[in-house]
Length: 216
Image 1 (cartoon, one colour):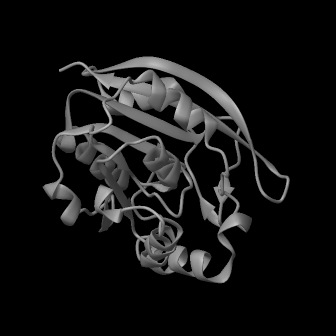
Image 2 (cartoon, one colour):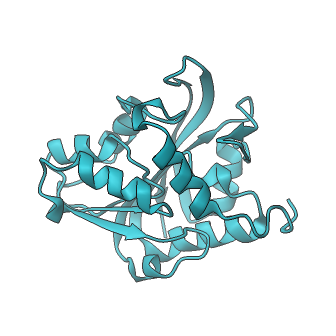
């Protein structure tokens, strides 16, 4: 896809507006019980102190669930300060010393470049918003920079039968072969399945969930 698509669009403003104007549990991507992600995380057999990175976390309920399960080394990121503030407020009863919050752009990272030795990279519904080759390359370069050998990557994006837009933005639809191609031969696909997500409004969204492991 051409790099001239939305070159000057303010994605930070877009996502801040989304989180400031709509209750979290009414957002089109809100997931009260992230069963598919939890199943794939469980399949990784991580220790409780493994470094789990959630890309474009929003105000995901997944983080509270992981804390409740005893995971103690979680790093979350978003481009939206409003989303991270909402997440912090939702985790009020937890010890936030177990969670590091990083406000940064996955496609033009600064603070995220300091990350290292990530055991698990988790992305639900983030990558598919990166519609240009430049954005996609920056995203996958970051994965390859911060993920440790034998580390895991969970990518859950709109599949080829899924919606072509989300939150008013164009998206790129994926299947497991496309994700494998972007990650390269140093990553092995361990699990893949399609999943129909029901939005708070009752609408349906078709996802592909994938679990990869770095082999070199």
